Image (cartoon, rainbow, N blue to C red; front, side, top):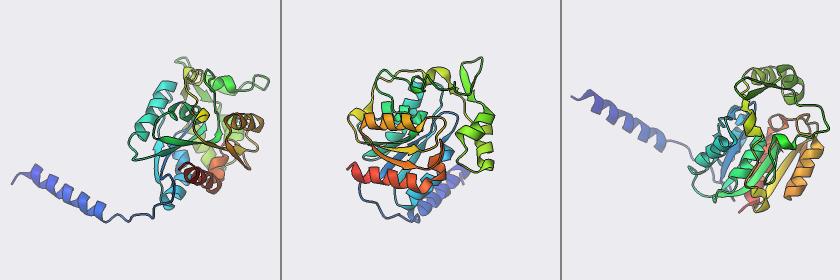
Length: 253
């Protein structure tokens, strides 16, 4: 008996059985594919509360893990995930992820954009270039290799104050640094010019001031909703965020 062939056959049979036994969710009306894109100093796990709601409601959801090594690499990471979806897609971006979906949103499968406490640059603008010049300098810590961390103390009180302290501390300690050049790369495309958009404003955001969020949303012609909370209000208000994404999916048919 060839052990390798036996194991392969058994594995294939088990996989077929498992897939055949998977319970299918009822399919929602409208666009069914959602792609979630995180921002700087974070990773895709922050989307889990929204992911679970959307999956329970029957959506096909994928989460991009941005490498944060360059703006071009992050856009490519989104394109790679979108290409694996079948049919039209809603792109959702938080913070720096908003800039990424603005550029990646020109993908032909993308039919709508959702910004959650996010940057929404225009062509020729960069993420860091949209930080208000008249405010205090951002509490970032540049490293010799060109990457930057967010100061831990500032992360806890200004970046993650909307969530519980234990989760905030974990996110601060597990933050993914971003290449400084990624935040300074000008966009060549602004998909919100041609595709509908929705914007969730955090009313007490200390990273992107609410006034700046409203300005970017207004310029993009976005449908705007406000939620109480700061830069991570989308986690603290996961149900409200999921409802906005589902409204975008229904409105982008």
